[in-house]
Image 1: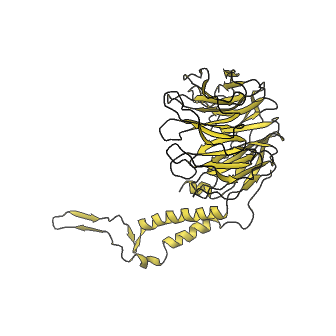
Image 2: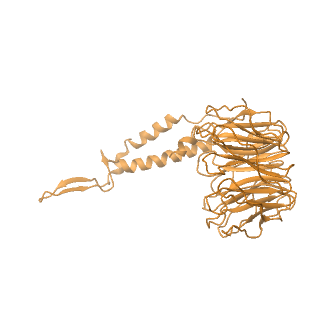
Image 3: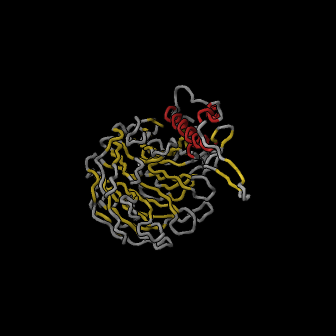
Length: 444
């Protein structure tokens, strides 16, 4: 095991922090509460019981309810300060180094045992594989779902047939295939079930209920025909022919879905490499989408797109990774269907190919993760909570040709760990989030 751990002095032990706060609550400063109106219980001349609660409980002149409220706020503030001063460290654990050209990674509970398992795609060996989470921080050897794909590019997971088991989706560029694999619920999967083989070079696959019928539909981005398409799910895992959303995403590499205009319908996002575009497509709510609405074409080599509320204003923002300008950027959603110009998070993610957002430090703000192909870095950027991000903090600098990054609680300790796929070392790895404060803050 290796990894990048925090340097410098250790934070104050949590028991000491709580003891200090307890002493503050029951301390000798009761004189500060001398003006608190004490509740009383009395009986009038008619025998009527009178209770004056006043929303207070007074013990020895101390308003206990007020102090409990203040204590909760003080604990949260103190923990947030500790997290800011001593952010999470991450320890690297190799799941496998046997996936030739590991390019995509995802996490989902595939066997319904309460632990998040791991999925991978390898473009070199054409494999889709999963790794059983033993629940103790270790994973099984690769369990091969498919091994005959030509240039597998993307893997995703969702319940496509309403049987309460999470199925698997894949996109493979060389054989132009979007497919799924039915989860039998016993740790095994069906053979490949083809959704489509008519698009040219599918690079990304995603699942979302695009028509609000309760069924998970499928989305794809195909690079050689510049197409973003969706496939309607009839509810039994049978899908329609591709329904093109656009054929104007020149070199489309990534697709995602999120409700960007708060109308209750999931809109679609794309990243297209050759025209440098991050774009979205308004869901009209009837199975059709509006024409392409360009968010930006001012980045160089758009590779990946993701959506999350990064500034806590109730609107889903957009974040992108672009390879040629090494940029991770986000776009503020103004709430009216328009977005800001790119707001740069970093230009040091050399060969940026993947981006993700997750609250890694438990402060309630979504942080950003990136995977950089050229310099082999998995990096996180702490969200300051005001629309700005801290300087890059490297989780790993040895992920050779890093291609994908994801976050999930893999060890069940209440904080989000990190997953990566790197192609040159054929590796799927996870990084244990060792923050002692995040799980506690998440429960306050």
